[in-house]
Structure formats: structure tokens, C-alpha cells
Image 1 (tube, rainbow, N blue to C red):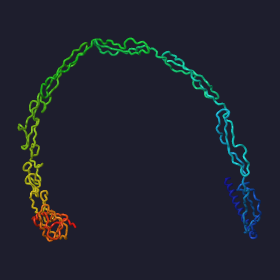
Image 2: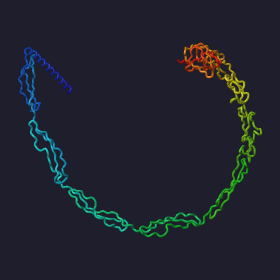
Image 3: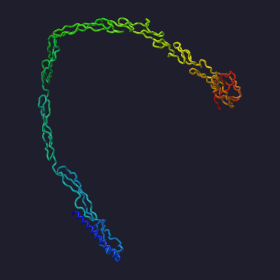
Image 4: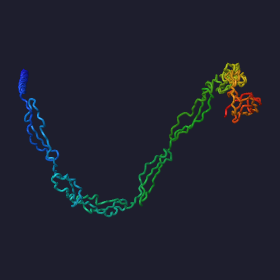
Length: 543
């Protein structure tokens, strides 16, 4: 409750302050507006103040300033003052004096001696010289002082070793000694001597005599026999030999003595079995055989033999063919006979077989084999005639007997129904100017070059005649022909396929002007040996 009352008082006081301030401001503005109408005044500067002290006593940066204020300020829109309210100018622009300045001393140099009374060391320093009237440096640019002024150390020094003494032993190993002393003692922190004043070494006074010495005997060896009158055992001993004139050992290095000299027991021993006796039967399932053996009796308490002196075993319990049957064999259906079925039956010789009439019977051990004769096929008990590798003939033929087919299709013939070559057997009816070509089961006829037709009938093509120009170079070859009288008024030629079999060809260099010429030409079927009335085939023209 008190807090709310205090807040109300504070808010009321603030509002009263704003109200009073606004009222005062309103009254001031009202008086200013009234004075503005009769208060015009122009601004006017007052006089300059004195210059301030220079900012530097020397150098090229020193400055000083002065200022002025308004004597009369402008009012009621009066003219404002012109120009600056302060001024700055340079001052004391001259060089600054600088005194000489020493630099830091350098490090001391190494001492000229490590000990004694003459060691020195030195150091130096530089400077920056005086400038513009400054004071010069005082003092020296170098210093020298004593160093290492202490006594020099002297190391200890041994004298030379003396001579070695005599060996302490008259023989064997001994010792010898020698001595030395300190010649110069250590001083002023010098190194002390290292080592001793006495030294020794081994020496040898010559070999010492040593007598031979026997070592202990070894244990006895095992006896050579466990009984009887020949058992022995032995032992040995080694020695360290004498040395350098010592005495030799007396006695032997080995010993042998008898052992186990008593009766040896011999056990009963079976001798080897004798040979087996003859078997009671040659075959079947009841045969037996027997063998025996003897012994060597036991002696001197040996063990007696155990076991039998004879034994029996089965024998010949088999049948080479058939089945066992008591003391023999049952041979039924085996192809063998006899007590043990070991006699082969020749079925072929006795006729007891089932081979085909066109097969051959061959006796085998315990049986027989049937093989079809040549020209037949089958298992020997059944045989069929074979025609050219098959039981049937090709191309409609009938197998009438081995390797012979008849009634073959047209164009094929016996005995294998193979193709008939009508061309070589002159069974074709091709035209004389046609060529015959054999095919499978038939043939074809084709008219020769220069002819047309079905091949069964061919007609010669009509020639195309072309006149040869005068002085045309042609060649005519006549390997076997006679002299022919050429009566045509001019040479002509036509396509080369017409007279291909006339063998007329050109020889280089023969002139053939228009007129009658004698030439040699072989023209089968057209030449009569004197004249040739067919057209010459010109192979090439040569100008």
C-alpha cells in the first residue's frame, strides 16, 4: 500500500515539471519574437592573440598558432564574420645539435695464454659522431686487461720400468716382476700418474717331470655267454702318460676273466614240417592231404615241445568246370566231360551245335563259336545275305545273292546298283556337236560353242562376217596341216567361239592383202588338205 502511494507521488511530480517547463519556454519565445523586430546587428572580429610557443626548438617540424574571437556577434539576420578564427606558422626550422654517442663494447677476445703471468684479452667499441654543434665523445675506443694469470699445471710423469726379475719357478709356470717410480710429481692441478709402481707377468721355468698315472678300472662288460664253458667278460683302464722324463706305468690296461661257466638248458625244438602228402581226390569237395614233423629233445632243464607232430588240410576242393559233387564234379551244361570236367567236348566235330547253314562252326575251350560266312550277316545262328555292306540294296535293287543286287532303278546297274556313266559307255544320244555330262542316274547334253539347241539336236550359229582392211597383219598357225589355197576375195573373221577346235592362230608379221594366199592351217572337219572354205578366226590385229 505504501509502495503504490509512493509511485503516485513520483508520477504527479514529473507531470508538474513538464507543465512548468513548457510554460517558461512559451514565455521566452514570446519575448524573443518581440525583440526581433528592433535588434539587427553585423558580426565584428576582435584583435589577434599573441603567437604561442614553438612546438619544437629545432628541426623542420616546429609550428606556432594564434587566435581571435568575435567582438560583436551578428543578430537579427546580421552579416556573419568572414575569415578564420586561428592561424598557424612554421618556427625554429633549423638543424638540431647531437652529441657523440658510444656504442656497446664488443665481447672480450680470447686470452693470449691459458696460464702464467703474460695472458691478456681486449675489446673495442664504436660511436656515432657529434652533429650540428653537439659535444664529442670522451674515453677510449679499446680496452686491454690481464687474464689467466694463474700457475700452469704440471702433469705427473713415470720413470722408465726397471728390468724384469728372475722367474719364481725352476720348472713349470712362475712369475717375474719389475718396478718404476714417479720422476715428476703433479702440481698446480696437473694430472696424477695412472697405474702402479709394480708389474708382473707369467714365466715358464721349463717342463717339470711327471710320472705315468693309471686311471680307475671301468666296470666289467656283459658276459659273452649265459652258460657253457666259454663265457668271458672284460674291463679296461686308461692312463695319463709320463712327461718330461717321469717314470712309466707298470701293468696292463685291460683284464679278461671267465664267467657263466655252467650247463646251458636246451628247449625242445620242432624241426621243419615235411612235404604234403598226395591229395585223396583230384577234384570235388572232399579231398584232404597230410604232413608230419619231428623234434630235438630238451636238455639241461629246457622246456618240452608242445603241439602236434602231424596236420591235415583240405586240397583240390574245386572244379575247373561244373560244380563240386563229392569226390568229383557235375559237368552238366559245361561243354566238358570227365570226373573233374576237364575234357573239352568238340561240338563242331561231333555235330552237336546250332550254327546256321551259311555259318562256320569253330570249337572253343568248353564251347563253340558260330560265324556267318562271307556275304552274310548275323549272329552265326541266324545269317542273312549281305549286299554291299547292307542287308538291302540301294536304288530299288533286290539282294538276290551275297554282294549282288538285281532289278536296280533306271540309270543304275548290278551288282551294286551304282550309277551308269552313259557318256563314257556311249549310251547317250547327244548330238555330234554337243558335249555329254554324266549325272547321278542320268546325263545331260550341252551344244558346243558356236552351236545352239537342246543338246540332242544342235545347229551351227550363223557367222558374222567382217572384211579385213588392206595390209592387215594376221597370223596362221598350221602344226600338221597341208598347203591350203585361200580363194576368198578378202579375209574375214567372226566370234572366236565358233571354230575353237580348228587351232588356227596368228603368226606375227604375215601380210594379208586382199587376194589369193597360200597358208598352212589345221582345221579338223573342214580342211581337205588343199582348200579351206571356212572363215579364218583372227586372234589379233597388228598394225
